[in-house]
Length: 125
Image (cartoon, rainbow, N blue to C red; front, side, top):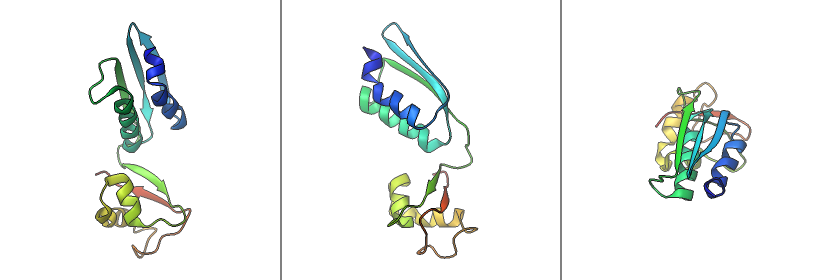
């Protein structure tokens, strides 16, 4: 029953290719562990856990590690995106586009010019 409740979390873990992912049911509690590629993926998993179980769920324990703590995420630019839209997605604030630009000056010369397919570093918050 508890595994069904958190199936969306397990599905997300598979989609994110969690390294060393493990899932156990211990009585009425679900125990999950594994390593995400970056902090953004870890945040996504925690958001999914809270969506399924509430703000402080007591029927799940999660030991989620982060493989690369040097960046918040990596982002591949899609058609129609801007640095401000990307900043809004990751930080909730479009004005933080400058932070993304500064982390990618090796690839970007102008914050108003990005191209689909570019791989951008999203720095830690």
